[in-house]
Length: 192
Image 1 (cartoon, rainbow, N blue to C red):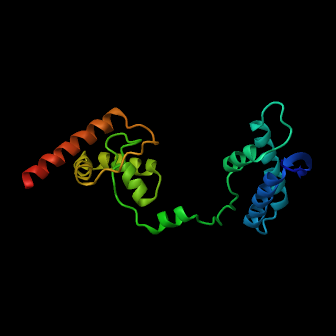
Image 2: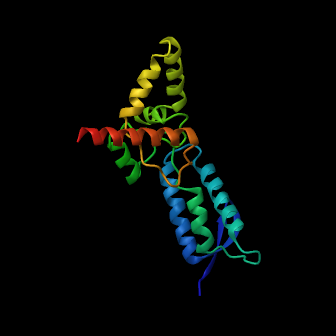
Image 3: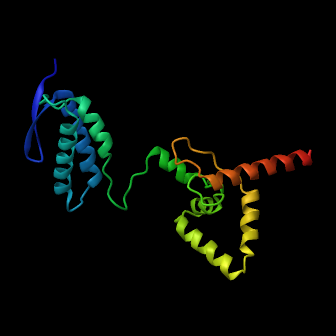
C-alpha cells in the first residue's frame, strides 16, 4: 500500500503516491540546478510542474485520481531533462560522439542521388541545404565538370550503415548504392 501525498504543482493540489513524489522532487531539483541563476528560473519551474501534471493526467485511467509512478515516469521521459540554451551539459553519448572525429560517408537515407551531399554535410557539420546549393553552383559554374567530381566521390566514399529506425532509402539512391557496391565488388575481384 502506497502513501498518498498532496503536492502542489504550479500552485494546484494533486494527490501523488509517495515514491512518485520522491522521483518528481528529484527531477525538479535537477531542473532547478540545471537552470542555475536563470532570471526566469521560478517561472520555468512552475511551467515544468504544470507540464508534468498535464502529462500525468493525460496518461491516467478515467477513474484514477492519484498520480502514480506508472504515469509519472513516461511523462518525465517525454518532457526530458531541462537544459539552459548555450550551457548544455553533455551526456556520456554526446561527449563520446563529439570526441570521435567524423568519418566521411555517403548517407543514402534522405539522399537525392547517392548521399554524397548528406555525408559531406555531416562530416563538415553544416546544413545539407548549404552543401546542395554549393554543389548546384559548382555544377553551373564549371559547365558540368562538377558531375565528374561527384561521380568520383560517389565511387570512392564508403556508404554509411542504413539505420533500420531511420527513413527509408528512396528508389534512386537505392539503385545507385546497389550499382556502386556491385561495381566495387567487381573491381575488388579484378584486383585479386
